[in-house]
Image (tube, rainbow, N blue to C red; front, side, top):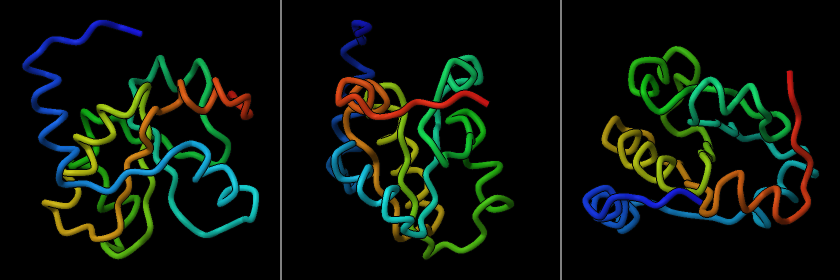
Length: 124
């Protein structure tokens, strides 16, 4: 795992105080059951291309505020965000909440926790 700068971690930790989080183990049965929710990968394009969670859509953290309304116009829609380790997704979740989205969850541990659990990764 990359070593993160202290100021970045400080911002992430502050965001995590304001967002709901779940784990990969929480998301997997929801996917398996066909539950209706948006699973959004907020990683960079190259990370997405290397592999992502099944049924996920890609809206990178750098453009999520710009593009979210076109892709998910319903601000009450259930959304689970994930990234590499759960830091960028927490920042994105807080941002979406500020935009009025009320049912946003960040997947703590991100795709790293997903792959460590042995869950399927797909490529388009």
